[in-house]
Length: 115
Length: 115
Image 1 (cartoon, rainbow over the protein chains, first blue to last red):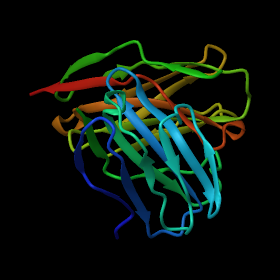
Image 2 (cartoon, helix red, strand yellow):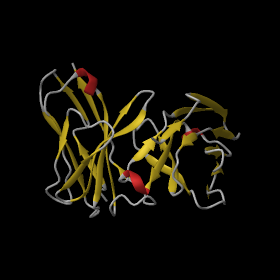
Image 3 (cartoon, rainbow over the protein chains, first blue to last red):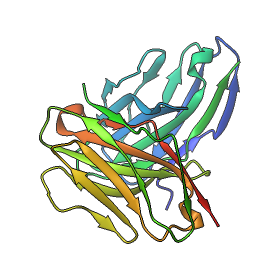
């Protein structure tokens, strides 16, 4: 019962470095999304996807890229890391195209620090 | 734009007592869902309870219940018979059909439970 798997769990980057946060789900979910969590601000949506080959921007997309080549995977890429991207990142998925009533399944998060 | 506000950054409750966490939201839409998520120190996001906006009856899940006041745009969470395991960060969240599956989170309330 893997659910939503995020790797790595912790990462430290230097300003300007690039990296990819991995997210995989084994529930055949169509909908996948990335959130970032910052103290006092709750979670905010970065990007989301309603199916393979389809992605769209959320509330805070700047500095992040995504792609969805398979149903299972939804990686989040930081092209040139900045200290403002220090945060906890969550991947979440649900069965269909983000239908409002559906439960979101969250991964366990990635703690990212950019120095 | 929709917003969710949790005005209590921290709350404390004695074990076995009852506590209520407040949440207000702002929207012009009529079809939406409201959620409470629990985030323990493990960082995992756990769905506690959800409420459909078109249902007048308040949702309940064992010791957790909500007081949904649609006209007042209020959605509070009541935890009865509080247990030490209830200590966590609690997030109120809003989701509508017109938001691409986006969850809009409040700032969170840190609940501590005293033995």
